[in-house]
Image (tube, rainbow, N blue to C red; front, side, top):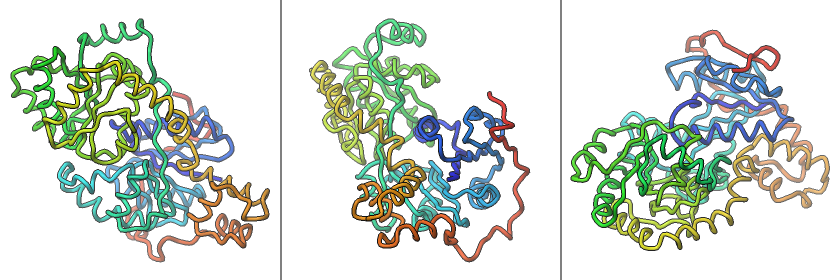
Length: 438
């Protein structure tokens, strides 16, 4: 099967890029049978995955994301005969016969509209319901996310599949020698509270600073901020500048992914009280490193962390501060709880990053195999049954339905705008035989 990945987000900052990179790494490690076409919006990326024989890389540059999604991608799908198209970031091509897998990581842009730019709000409110209805399957990261998104998008829950995000294997408890190297490299304080995330109202940085101001008057701690500037970051930074104890807030600058595990290991706790969190990769990374966590009551973090975190109302500065103080009063017990919870959920988290719910194309292949091996539909596995239901296949005529599914996919729309729009720029491509390793 030929699977297309729309990865114009590759290289961006933020959790979705981390998710995308991890997903690609695991898929290519585990799946040697399917063919992959990686489609970039940056020709400098061509060759990044050239060592994989089952990967072809294509780059088409365009400043206009909507044009790239809805005109460029369908032409590539048709030319390359792609059967399944997947985008890890919030869109799919509408005008294509390929089967479409839509990824929505969380409901932040519906739950906290004011935390996003006005034009992003308009785009999401109009386009996301359309994408969700056209998609064959909608992926998200938690059960809570399914409940929230189904309500916002007004589509049935049975169209969704969820899979917990995973963390890179580098996130773990580290030895003291490595920790000392990172501590000296960034001149980190002996005792600190860690904040990781974009400096934006959504991540609630302003209230984090105010809560830290309360805690710092009782405990001798500094706040280490590992983040980058995003929407309305000026307002968030003004709050930090206005504090009496602003000298206790440390900005180490850009921190590469390779050094992040040491930050979690060195920190006394992670504070991450987003106004809404669709998943919250930092809380999972902190758990893997044995770092205590204060996070938000809203969104999906309760499902992700279980008892490994203290939850606070993200709009209540006093409550955030109280939860931070609670950890500091009994840090050993909280560290033990985090490690115990991580050991319990680690197999589930690690597997599902490339498990049955993420790699839909691989699941379809499993369905093919199951159809050949199990002529009785009642004997198929629960996984196969799930996919059959998602795709609307009549189980009484499974082999015939599979032939129809793979060879005669129905068109998404009878009418296409492609003919009214200009052709994309010349493709920059790299096939396994011609691309050069970076």
